[in-house]
Image (cartoon, rainbow, N blue to C red; front, side):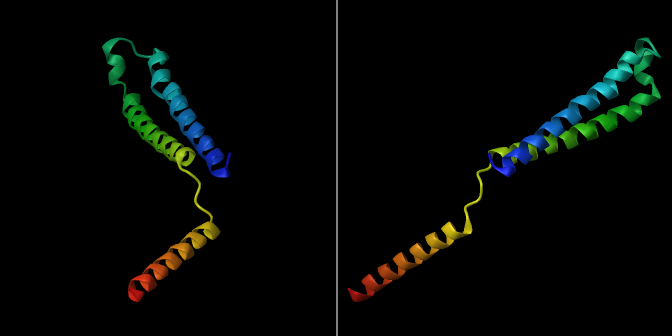
Length: 104
């Protein structure tokens, strides 16, 4: 496994862990707090802080997971030596084709 794929796995796992842990420590902790009960529990001022922060953290986590997944699934780049050899072979073939059409 290449270095890029290993970094991709690490980034994906960090994004996943960050999202899951923040959901546990944010809204679920506030729900289980029990300081306010009934319908008024959702009108607590802490929800105005927790919900936007939770959404922002989840979006950052999703972005990190997407970047990690992209790093895992993207094939490694072609080495420059192979690319240069392919370009030289294509140029030689096109020059040979041009010379063949001129001789006819």
